Length: 407
Ligand code: PMT
Image (cartoon, rainbow, N blue to C red; front, top):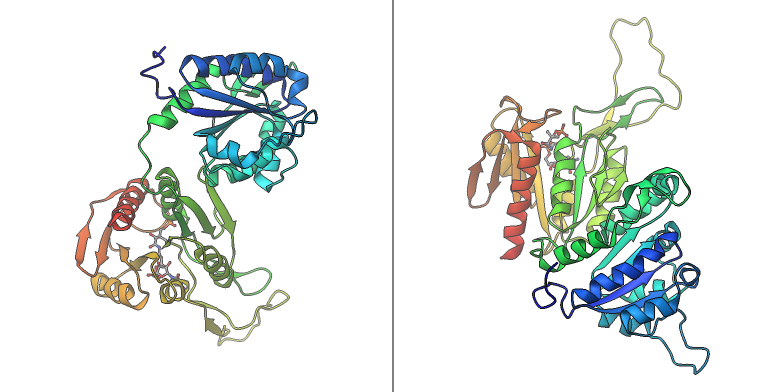
């Protein structure tokens, strides 16, 4: 173990939140380890947590009085959640029950531990602890994704025997692992897009003709999802406005599902209003049927075929480009001929900061596959990249975004 002086936790103020879980007994060891590393520890408990571990134990180990209520009923002294949040270098909630995680995700503030979360400006880390079915439940997973998307770090629970006697994932991480996660947090380099919010459009839109048929294209969403993933890895908050796809949502990304170009426009516009930028990777229908039939269109025996009347959809990128102000806007251009000229036109017409050009004439580029071959085009010129995985293309796009924002 690192000596107190060399530990990245030495002198750090750790606010330790304990909620009502059987794993609360591990908080005693956690507090001891933090103290050994030289951290100052202030414990906040929920009322239920006191049933699992006594305030006397935690006060003795942390060498500070424990805080549970908003004020001390004996003398009326006020426990200020605001100053607790200001004091802390990190707010660690361990164990964090499904109930507390749900309240955090919803902004419920019905105890001191939660009001402190709402007012904390410091980084927040949670170590979930619960039964395997509660952990796997979609609401818990949705709440964790929501918290992660807003910058809360999650120390994943382990698998093994649970208090219920069942086996599975849900055991709170061991105190040693949580201390390691905290040390990493204090030593790791700040991510380049921390504090930034980006919108990504991805996948194909679907324009209904009747209840049975629709107009769409070949986009799988892979390119856009890789970009959302890399933006989140670089520390950004990401809103992914997605057409229909079978892909899983990248960790820490908020996803808004849409169907039509109009729905994508509304969702992208709303998210862009409070974002620092957007990457427009979706393949959006440029035309949609003038009318959507309410029942299935029947075929006829007439030889001349049928006419489907279409109208223009909104150009989402151009609309955001016209209103972008100081924000960064990255566009794609998918071409089949005259690639460079078309990309340059889109750069200007849609007010993009740069365009990611891909051509269907290049093998391994464009729709569906796991690779792409792109050229970055901006007002200064172009940079052609070799064929590479879509994930690597996404990483290069995010690097370019980070360098533009750093200027
Ligand atoms: O999803 P994959 O299978 O991985 O495939 C990836 C991809 C080929 C879809 C992707 O690499 C790509 O090229 N996306 C853009 C496709 C496209 O529609 O390009 P475009 O040249 O028609 O449009 C130019 C730009 O305007 C794009 O940023 C597009 O998102 C945007 N646009 C276009 C029309 C419209 N109505 N609204 C828009 O926002």
